Image (cartoon, rainbow, N blue to C red; front, side, top):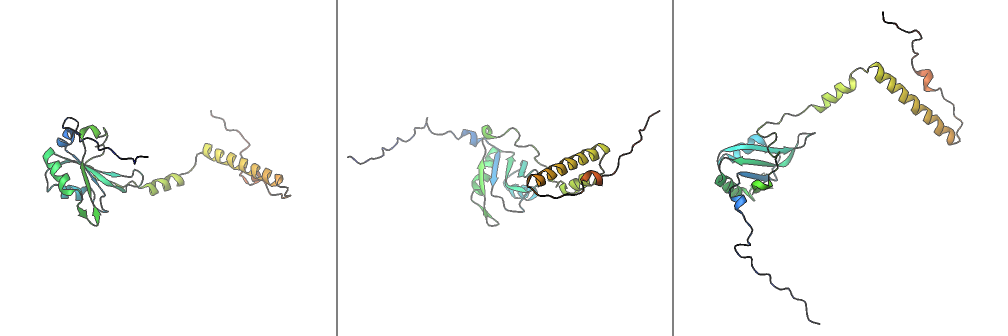
Length: 187
């Protein structure tokens, strides 16, 4: 049996070569593996050494606001973006090796720049949740809460009886506040 050999693939001709014209005129730079503390202000200050930065967006978690450690920058000139990408790709910054690539216009998401050039303001989720939790309940909400508690109490009693345990406890209905017996009329 003859040994299997790989045939060498022919080298692509200039017509078949992958096109880089989309990247040549791109002004958008992807910067990945950002170190902690290197955010909007620091990025803008650092990359202005190459040229004017028109837009900047650090990707962040919506709930916590923490950085996802990558950002997009847009330069005023495409040649400046190409120089910055070439110079900063593989650059070590605070023990992190940066990844910098030009993003072709075809690969840019329509909402890529949503929220760009804004400094991040953390949303006080704990305070919002505390206020929501502590606000007084309406009469309808209290009634709904009591009905759910009664249903749970009844299911608990049925599970105890189904297990063959003879246990009698005061039902929750007797512990709930009494309803008013008189009716209120509006004149």
